[in-house]
Image (cartoon, rainbow, N blue to C red; front, side, top):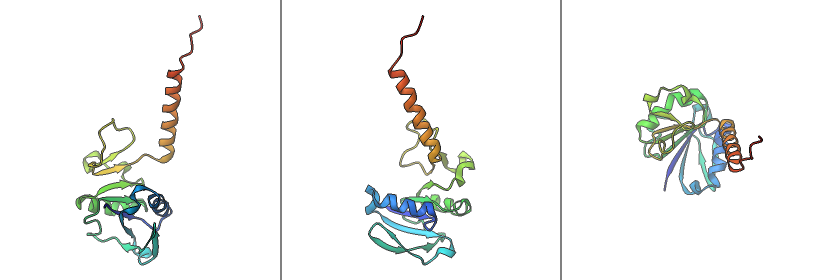
Length: 154
């Protein structure tokens, strides 16, 4: 069973992520909800499990398989390397790691050649959802045009 940490769990994005994961194959995972001190102690729910939001400490990411960063960019910048050092795969949904140099271990997911990111990639920065939707639309449009080649007019 996987262990998943959601840093920034009390943010709107964190709440949406909890809802999505609760209805996915990852719903059986063990969850740790993390956030800044002002959200500490709030009761929350992931799937059928009632839990509470914990403060982010230096050892919060120990034995965590996947760490989702959903809070502020500042929260992500302060704690993502702790998660990486603990051996957790970092998934930045806050956008904070967009500007990180490649040598830091963060890799942008959009634009990678096939096969360059997998479950062993230490840190992933997914593209903005609008950019992903646009790229899928353009890819689909391009395939459609190639499939239905129209005869050239002479």
